[in-house]
Image (cartoon, one colour):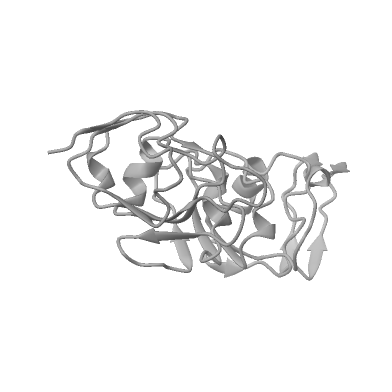
Length: 220
């Protein structure tokens, strides 16, 4: 059975409808799809469906597996296995979708214990809400521009520690997202009694009022 897929295996744009990777594959090289180097003006080369029958068997995947705007719909059998390998997600210049175990769910649930993930994950058009475990340590950037609801399974203090980048570096392109902390919709907020508070609540439409404790000296 097929075990290894070498670099540039499907680079030629004639492969553009559907590619299915069998569960016997354990190793994948770089740029197995490379639309970037084939594109010419007004070309529309991409793979409509890229399907992993069983991605839990993968043990070695090159960090540059994709090249260019290449996959419209990515289908995985096991999201946790994909995230644990630290594999990036393919780009696509248009609506693109993520299927998990043959389902195109609107809610994405990140596994408990996960510390970091590629933030391109929540930019899939079928994902409207995301559940984030308290174990996450990476910045979430401008997640509020891409989903409608965010469920964070940690405390408000942990949320501020997680979102330690100043939000004035991000643009606001939508209506904002609803923010839930431990399954409670955040509406009336009392800020943590910290000397410096970052702008981790910017971009969240559910918040209607904020109370600032006396101990807070700086916000932003």
